[in-house]
Image 1 (cartoon, rainbow, N blue to C red):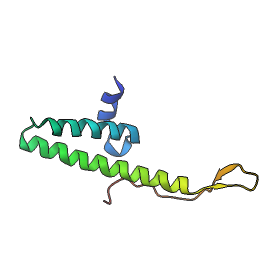
Image 2: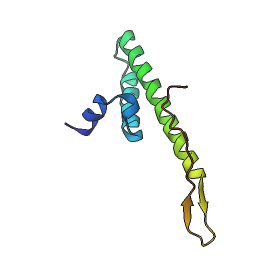
Image 3: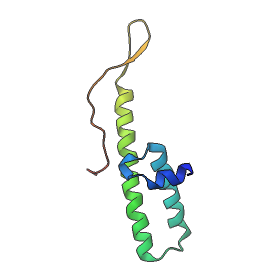
Image 4: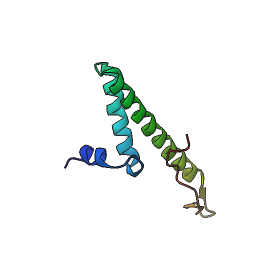
Length: 92
């Protein structure tokens, strides 16, 4: 099974950032084509909104992790371990 086909079979919350972004780009292209019936376009749009929220949550989590990156006294980099919740995109 191809990578994109495998990603489409996964639940939305199980997608990696790259898989979700790839699906979001595909959905945007479908909507831009404009040859989808209204009901179908609404379903595509709803899925795209969910994927966008998922991607935004994952980016926010990554940004928080990067912010925790600190420079040690000897110049080496380390990350501070903190219990950050993973945003599943369900809360807006």
